[in-house]
Image (cartoon, rainbow, N blue to C red; front, side, top):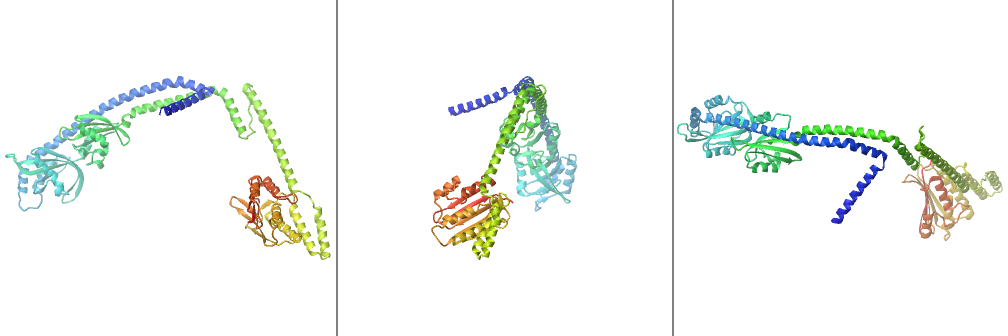
Length: 614
């Protein structure tokens, strides 16, 4: 562990030394470093101090502001909840309402749902003065008594929690927000409401009558209180939760009735639930966001008002200051760079130009020249010497290229122009007709084949012929050989479609066919077969192939030829396999030429790979 840490430390130190060497080894970088130190260091220090002070001050002020908003919101909600309790007391202490409820609940054999137009009218008169109320209902173990609207769902499961208020005596009980559906004779509507419930007592002797009054209040009321109180330039979310952490009111209605964990996470819920303080705050990180959470518990019930501020909103002003500082710093950096470049260019530009031109020369471009200035200083003298050196190198390279080109042309002429026997055409033609007059038909045909062979060999002085002409040359040679040796070797020729008019170096098939005739069938008199083909090569090009079923070659000879491209066989007329391979490489390129596949007793297959030439 110690050795690894030491090696890593040395590596970082070496990189730092290398970086420092780059900055101190260049005149331009020295100027830039000097200007950076004297112009940017004070600016950055001042900007950092200003940003830190402003951030701290804004944080303190916004925190105080959030606490004041929280107190104001809690006081407003407490006041409003107190009004609701007073309104409930007006209902449950009304002698007429209590009498009507006792009469309705005591009716024997009546259905579960009860209503009374007189009761509804009386309640409407009382509740109409406050638009916060959605409805009021009355519940007993025997009946559901409609007040303003009838609940859409009056099942035992929905009613049972409200009946627990009978166990609280004269105390109020608050119920969390739910989506309530209310119906009357005309329509129905669904509204998010929270409820206040209280048991009803006789007004004469304060004895309970077994009926619970349930006042449903629109949740929008709490949402509006929070929105009005926290209305500012700062992004503050204000909401209310009950003692169990269930959301009573929230700006987004989708979260109503869910746990506060969905908004603040497990950590946020734990800090609020376990805190013994009535009012406090804490920083929180939830879902990748940094938040500041303040909360205050209400006096009316066990509910809690929570304010949440995003740090990105909290530090919006300080971030704007930071942006201004960064813009000023960027302008100063740009000014410093331009100044450094202006001051250093008179010295560094000629050096950089010289380096650039040297790199171009290294890449093969010898046309670059240094443009001297009228001042004729040391850089101009260096540039003149550079120009002379490049010009001299260019002249030497051209001389070498011309010499190599002349050498290549001479080699081609020496390889393929063995003789220039144009005068033989007329002589051979005379011999042919003389043989025909003397009835020597075989001799006349041989002379005709030889004449065609020579014409194709000489061509028009060009290095290449068509594939069709090269095949015809081989056929002429085979015709002469049949008369000369009277051999019994079958030959088959196959050409792919479209290769007839392509061009090929001339005199490349005849030496290979000649080697096959002279060496492959020395141990047999019959059964010899030679296949000659020209096909399209998959790697773009064409491929000649001469295959025989002769005695084959030893593997040492094959490997030696494929590695060194030197033939171990004899040469005919100075043109052997090595000669053919060398001519192909001179005309087509070093990636083309001959390859041999052979095994003793299994024949020989000689391939020639050529490019497309039209």
